[in-house]
Length: 502
Image (tube, rainbow, N blue to C red):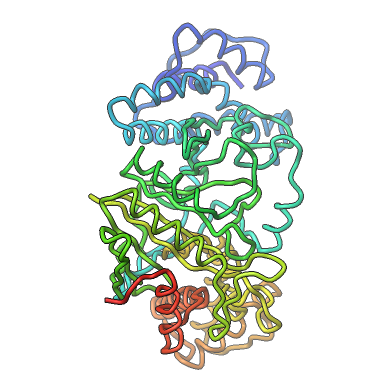
């Protein structure tokens, strides 16, 4: 490796990471140490890279990592670790990040978040080059539509993985989203270059960081500064409303905080949000209600795949009170006629919440339940087994809101399904082991559409099937089904809150 590689990094840090001229020698020497170098030679300017208009630093950092690996100084398995280690060196200290964020926020909080997001892309905490590899499309329909993404940047997690993570946390940092990951190099962590923002929600300290594997624009996480388990309680409503008061251009929400229905990280209390329009936001009213004690709150059940109660009001005080009432009531509400049991020896009923501001406060409360049965051991209101070939992970707030994050394996597997539909003969007995999960789906598609299809037709058939399955999964998560009995039960629950059908 030559010194030009180091100079390229320093120039990049000047341009994108606010490196101070007074820190150049210090940063240079830290980089020499990280790259196992002891000398810094005169620079041939012709060897320097044009750093203008770079969205992310791959073209600057990759030659360094390639050289470290080829020389045997670093194992390929440690590539991501060294990337984060090097980018941490050239990034501002957290105190400087906080100072600049707060200075920008004096004029515009959303501009401050936008700046931190751009910084996190440029220091490679947000894996922009990986995110851009994701595949996806938009589905339009009368309910508000769906967004479907095959995520190529993040591994799939099963429900058992989530439970294991809940009980097998390291001592320090206690999980991957803890603020203590900033600069931390133990356990092979790859979050040394994490930078975030401290904030107060509900009177308590919280920490905002952007997601390294973002699902949507400015996707981030608000994390309780204390490592405490996720819980759904009335104070959550206060916290999310505090957040949108702070940055009304963002939505923010919390998961149901229970295995199966509660997202992928349950051990550390956190919310997710960003600057984006989820499909559920476009959903229309199905039933309207009034609350005598809170006349300034519009209350509705949405025409959505699962069970969403939408609250709208210009009064924060009133919408907060109604939302808290629904959270409190649902957690103890039994409806045996509709197979809804709030609690046995453990809690089963919970709420997924998504809040935003659009000239008024809007709170979407999604009724959730994680009860299991002999027929559905992975959850009665989870994706049913016939759909696990497409999506087996917990259905958190993002999917419940209509944005499906499907596992990377599907890119390769669906290409094989397409080959089967294009073949002149079909022999499912020769499928490789990891393709057996798709055997029933392939047979169904062949029965409905035949074989010998051209490539475009085969791919379109598969695309429509994925869309159908995603819809069915959301219907699976509905505790009240869209039937006469289900609608009657849902309205009865609303009446139990003293909400009257209009």
